[in-house]
Length: 139
Image (cartoon, rainbow, N blue to C red; front, side, top):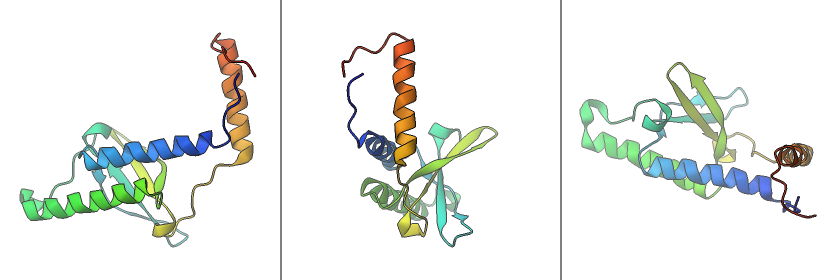
């Protein structure tokens, strides 16, 4: 297997954050509440048509309130793009799921990639590729 760059896991996190930002900007995801963390920070669940939920709009379909919701979604997307927050996980419920975002700007610690977890992941990936005949790269 070819040598993978040491920042591959960080790039995967960045890709996930950028995908979530694009989904926010296009209206496929929207903020759907807030979770208060015991450590004093908070997280924001995102859901929408793409996750089986509903798109949040202003009360009585008010254009002004819908604009406020869209503005908040745009700010969250910018925070994702600039790395101030990141996707932390998912919340699965019956019929839909939410994508949870948080970060230092919301009082939660930054998501760091563990060197040990990264090493273990790529060892398992290498074994999987070899077992399935997909290991075409040389060391």
